[in-house]
Length: 207
Ligand SMILES: [Fe+2]
Image (cartoon, rainbow, N blue to C red):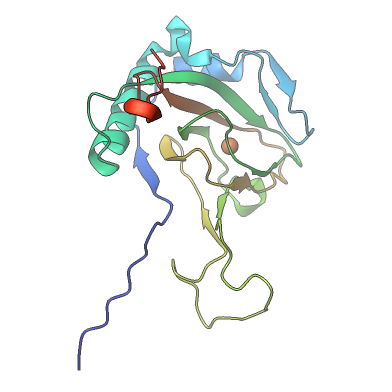
């Protein structure tokens, strides 16, 4: 019998790694920033939307860029002459009953999250839920006897402290509700090309 091949073609790459030993001074700096509520009032984010430019977070910015370079140039094989820059970065605080609605990151190409303080229990929530772009058979309620990367409508990841997750910015995602009294903190960021792209009639000047 021939061996069957099934390719997960044009999947959404989700990069997951760990940043070793994020120093406490740096986390405390993030926790004590001034915050404001999201437009949809389900969480808070730092008023500073370029927080990684602060000298107190220089160590973390370097670590994020190291991880970004692996994802962009090794995993996604983007040509090395195409440079990127961090555009926005902000700390997210989830207090009791906060959650993040399904969203994608606008005006960005690659986005990511570093988890500073995560929940220890199920009630603290904090799972990041990635949603399939094109649902399989969206009209019909076809059930499966198990779920895998070919048939799942969403994929949930429970991040641990110091974990970094990166994804293409148009990947839909949400965050589950914090039902506990403990606050959760993460730091989100966006990258955008800073090199000119393409040539001829597809040339785009970005420098
Ligand atoms: Fe997000």
